Image (cartoon, rainbow, N blue to C red; front, side):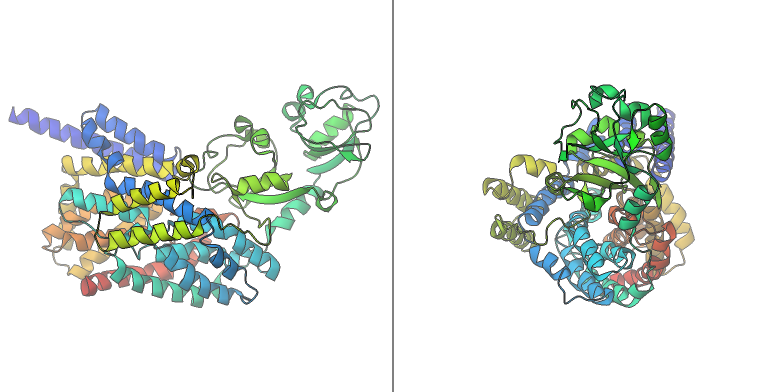
Amino acid sequence: MFDADVGEDVLSALITLLLLVLAIACFVGGWLAPELVALLAAGLLMATGVLTPTEALAGFGSPALITLVGLFVLSNGLLHSGALDRLRELLASPRIRNPSQLMLVLGFVVAPISGFIPNTPIVAILLPVVQGWCQRRGISPSRVLMPLSFATLIGGTITLIGTSTSLLASDLVTRLGYGSYGLFSFTAIGIPVWLIGACYLVIAGRFLPDRGDQRDDNLQALSRDGYLTEVVIPTLSPLCGVTLYASRLQRRFDVDVLDVHRDGQRLQPPLAQLRLQASDRLLLRCSRQELLRLQQDRMVDLAGTLLAEELPHIRHTEVLVPSGSFLAGATLCELRFRQRFNATVLAVNRANSTLRDRLGRVVLREGDMLLLQAPLDALRGLQQASDLVVLDQLDDDLPSTHRKGLAISVMLAVLLLAGFKVMPLVAAVLVGVAVLVIGNCLDAGTALRSIRWDLYLLLGGLYSFSVALQKTGLADQAASSLLTLLQHSSAFGALLVIYAITLVATELLSNAAAVALVLPIAAAVATGLEQQPMLFATAVVFAASQSFLSPIGYQTNLMVYAPGRYHFLDFFRFGWPLSLAYTLMVPILLLNLS
C-alpha cells in the first residue's frame, strides 16, 4: 500500500512537471492565448487525477479574483464618468511644451494614480491624449509612450489593488497559511519604488529613440503605392448592374470598396447591396497587381488618386488591439469587421512591418495597430468600446461628467472601508459596484463588458498550477535545491536571487505566471532559511510587477509598442538600468522597512 501511494505521488509529480514544461513552452512560443493555456492545464490536472475539481477550480472563486473583477467595474465607472478629465486636460495643456515636462507629469501624477486604478485602462484612455500632444508639438511618440507604460508599472505597487499580481499573491499567501496582505501592505516599499522610478523617467527619458511619426507615412505610402486608388466604371464594364456583394470583388481580387460617388454625390453605406452603374467613381483599397487585373478584365478605368483631404466626411485613424480584446485570434473576414464597426481596415502594422495584402485573412493579434477609414460617428462609437483603442483624439474637448461625483465618492469609500478594515476589501469592492449600477453610473451591460475575462481565466487557471506544485511536493523540492545554493547566503543575497528569478520568469512568461509558480517556492526557501515567508513573497510581487525589459512582458508595454514604432530591444536598452536598480533596492527596502 505504501509503495502504491509513493508511486502515485511520483506519477502526479511527473505529470505536473510535464504539464508545467508544456505550459511554459506555450507561454514563450505564443502558440495559444495565455488564458487558454491556463484553462487547459487546469483541465488536464483534473483529468489526470493530480487535483480534485474542488482544488483545481478554487481559484476562480477566490476573494482575490472576485476583487479584481469588481475593480475593473469600479475603474470603468471612474474613467467613463469623467473622473480623469482633469488629468487628460493636464496632459494636453499648452504649458507642457517638451518631453521632459511630460515626464514629470507621467512620473509624479500618472504613476501614483495607477496604484488605485488598474494600469491597462489608464494607458488606454491616455494614449490618444499623449499621441495628440506629440502631433501638436511635432515630437515623435517614441520619445514619450514607453514612459507612459512604465509610469503605470512603477506606481502600481503602491497599494494592493494596483496590479492583478498583488491580488493573486495575496490569495496565495493566505492559502499557504503565511498571513494576508492589507490594502496598504506594500505602501512603505511602493512609495520609494515609485519615487526612484519617476526620477529615472525624468532623467533618462532624453535617451529614448526618435522613430518619427508613422501616421502620415502610412497614408502617403498607401496612396503612393496604389493601395488607395480612385477608379471609374466604364460603360461596358461587367460590374454594371451588379451589386458589390454579387461582384465578389473582395474575394476574387482582394479589393475593398471604401466609397462610391455617383453624379457628384457620395452614396451612403451600407454598400453591399448597391447596384453599380457606368460612370460611378469608386475609392478602392487594393494593390497595383490587383488593380492591373481589374483593368485587364475591363472592369474599371483609372481616375487618379483620391487623397484623404478630399473626403471631409471620412476620417483616417489608427486603432490598437489591446490585451484581452475578443478580436485577437480572429481574421477580419471572420469578424465581419466592416459590417460590425462600419469601418474599413487599410493596413495592419505589426512589429514594425505593415501588412496590406489579403487583409481579410490576417489573424489579428494583441498589440496590432490597424489603420482605419471610417465616418466620424463610427469612430466615436469605437471610442466607447473596450476591444479597440482609438489612438486619435476625435474631439478637442471630451466632456463626460455623467455621475462623476458618485464614481469618485464610491472609490474613496471603498479605499477607506478597506484601509481602516471596516470590512474586507472584496466586500467593499462588491458593495461599490452595486452602488455604481444602482446609481446609474454604469448599466449592468457596461459593467460586464468592462471586466477583463481573459485575465480572470488566466489567474484562475494558474492558481491550479500553484496548488499542484504544493500538493505534489515539487515546490518543496525546488526550494530544497535553491536552499543548497543559498545555505551560506545572507537574507539580502537570498532575496536578490528570488527577485532575479521572478524577474526573468515575468519577462519570459507573464507576471501572473511568475507569481503562481515562484511564490510557493520562495516562501518555502524563506522557511528553510528561517526568514519571514511574507518578506520573500513581497519580493516576488514587486519583481513580477516591474516589467521593463521587453514589450511582451506586460500588456501596457505591448499597447505602446506599435504606436511608438519601437524595436524589440528598445525596451531592454531603456529598461535595464531601472530593473537593475530595483533588483538591488527592493531587497534592501524589504529588510529595512518591513
